[in-house]
Length: 158
Image (cartoon, rainbow, N blue to C red):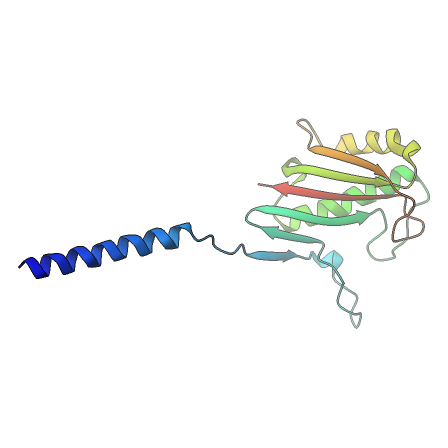
């Protein structure tokens, strides 16, 4: 009887220790690319070099978006229209991940001319309501598309 009890105790102790070990080992986060149809490459075109968004553990990381039309890649001449297009492109990625601008927690804005900040801010305030996400605004010399004056990245969480 004593031998059976000791075996049972050892078995339970091993199960307890193994269970604790498995609970303390972090699971690898599952990454899901968010690629709305509007961002898909044209038929016959090469695969894009980036994902518009990556969703990991409920947090969405949106790649830098510029204010270019997604089909023509044209940047509007009017700066406010460029900002609106940029934020609309971000909205497409948010929606594809089941989120809205209200889910944004952090925003990074890159401007080729910091004198455009106030004009950007006026449009920005119509998309992000209070409490607004944290934000950084940085002046840069240029962006990947020569006519682009603004690029925005967003991190959002449900």
